[in-house]
Length: 262
Image (cartoon, rainbow, N blue to C red; front, side):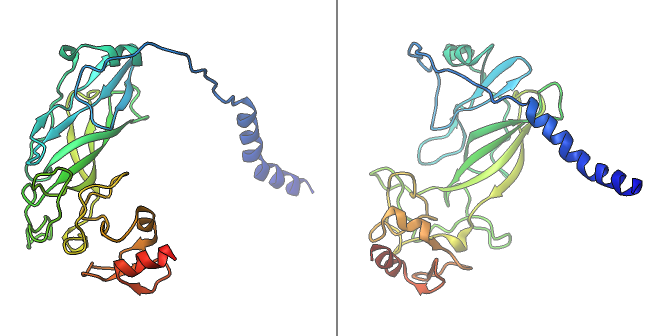
């Protein structure tokens, strides 16, 4: 009987500890208050990565790298302050350009920081990981048949502008800093679509649709509405007109659109 009681107590111990921790936890509360208008004094796209480095609040706006369409940039910088108000209110002269990896093997095209994660195992708070958005074109990353990397400048759809400019291919990668964001090391990509999966002309003529879909991995803008994108998945290497609808039945892109409309 004693051994059974001891075993039961041993099995229940983790749950008892968890219950104690849960009872001590309090949901944080906050209140939104009216504030003055802040003028942002530096380049900004749609992202605003930020992190606490020790007792310093640091933001990382801007763009860095080669871009034949919108122009090469060295605008990825950081601003620091005791809090968000200070960091966002700094003059342009207070923004610092960190040391970034050079464009070349391993890093092609332009990058923006989507978000910055602080390594919790570094008590100094200076080890940071940045998730970056990367855009390329056949010009910045030409096709290499030996490695299967890059893009072929053939049947390429147009981009956002009215002039004849190519659409961008976006990829997602990681950079690491061990000094609070003063310098960054490229750690590589973890999300990308390669040439065999590109949706090109004549199936894509898209220049722009709300909420994105301006990439060669996007959709047929002539016949398919935005909600249809969520119903289409690519099976294997993409061939013209050969997509698979969610139900697993072979359909062309146009037929998928017709199915959705019904």
